[in-house]
Image (cartoon, rainbow, N blue to C red; front, side, top):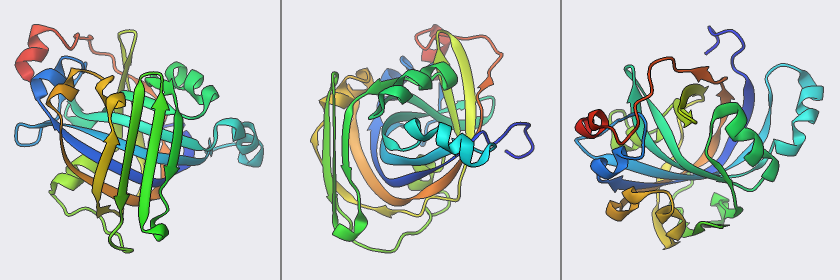
Amino acid sequence: MLTNAGEPLFLAAWDRAVFIHYEADPRLLQRQVPFELDLRDGHGFVSIVAFTLLRMRPRIGGRFAEWIFRPIASHEFLNVRTYVRHDGESGIFFLAEWLSNPLSVRLGPLTFGLPYRFGHLRYAHAQDDGEIFGTVTANEGQLGYRATIPVTSFDPSETGSQTEFLVERYTAFTCQRRRRCLFRVWHEPWHQTPIEIEVTADDLLASTGQWWRSAECVGANYSPGVDVWMGRPHRIADQFAPASSPSSAHRA
């Protein structure tokens, strides 16, 4: 990232992250994604990532720049993401994102092309308590979950494992008004542990597309979090192909 001028653009922390992983029919999923799916053993996946953004600030500008960013520096996030590839690079594509900060909801689509929506997010993710839970309530529905954390030590994912495939992603692809972009992030590998999770409400996920009709929960993970470098958006110059086109359907 440091080899690109002007990057990283932002610094931040992604704190106390919960990952909930679903397997989904790639044929249904591909119809709503304007990039080629990144499949594992022929299977498509969607992951829900609930975390708190902390102290986002520009890399350049010091305390004054950090003060300017204070209104959007820290708040809760819920990402609904799937796994894609473009031009040999693997990454993620956001099907939807909910934030608890109205100002960030306005800015995200303009700067990064992100599908931000407003919601009321309440997370209790402190692993010292032994139990965690979260609720997200929005116009589209509600998500609720709870879990126990069995250990207090956390490790990087095993190389080549499904967990590594699902959590270690460093490029995000976006699309807004037929304009495709990407941005990259850098952080140390997630130190995480598998968790047994109970999803108590899920109609919010049903609002994100027909992939949900085939969804099956295949696991969950918890991480205390990472410090992150966030890059600037880059325009993808190749021609846009709608996700419902015959070529996309054939790739699925």
